[in-house]
Length: 365
Image (cartoon, rainbow, N blue to C red; front, side):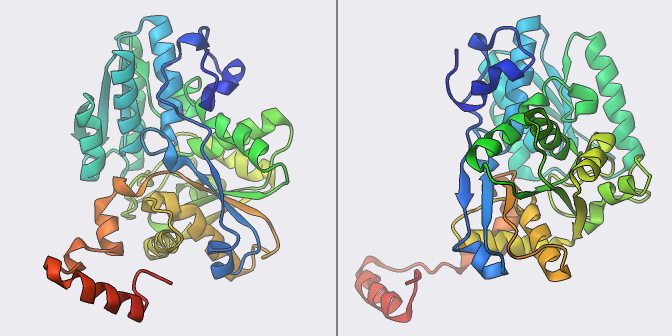
């Protein structure tokens, strides 16, 4: 039996042999107190960050892949097939390698290069497909087709939404279990929304425990499918996705019903921010020593927007979910700090440079 990590909750996961779970150490991610740093800067009293970027593959999708490949192993399936904007695919490929299985991913045509390299580096097979993510009808049609063919070929459909992979997605619910342990007091939980599975999983996990906090879904304005679903259009956007935030380029919610229920049943709401505000939130977290990708900073962007609009009282305790690590989007890192701006010096200059930097306040006081 695996005693630590997500598999502490084995009795709540749909597997027969948790002692043979396919695990790389996922779960038990830290809840980082940002009350004295980020909270003070943005005008909030209490703020915590659930650091899902600390999972083995750098995102919360590791939890999903761990359950999926445990099921694949138990059932003797040929592997998993799914769509991915990057993080889910990277997790699938890594856990396939750990299980001695296979992962076949159909990704966004413009998937960011580091995420594609992650998939291929650990043995995943990828094909970039036009239309996935950016077009609502095409994304849904492709997902439906993959689910149908996967079943026929004896594979698990690892499309990271409860609509397609309800058993594997129970891994997401363990985030709620951990939060309930780490922060017993009620807090508003902000989460980024791509396909809706994270928001749905949080809702289901908290509901199992009997106390659901207010849940807020945050999306970039160029991919606001949750707002559409809340307005009665679960079929997704009526125009192509325009956001450049990797991981949130989803024109349709795989879990539209679940995401809508999460917001409405918890008394929450949705927030729309623009890409620039998300990048600004990423920079704020970086200033506090937390390097996440833009999608991982989206929840904080939603908090900042709600404070500015008066939808959030500064005294309310808040948790933001940081979904992915900073190394996953190097273009975004270059916007924060380009390596070209760092000077090259000779060894004999070290003493003078150090004195100058200390005197000028370089490297922070």
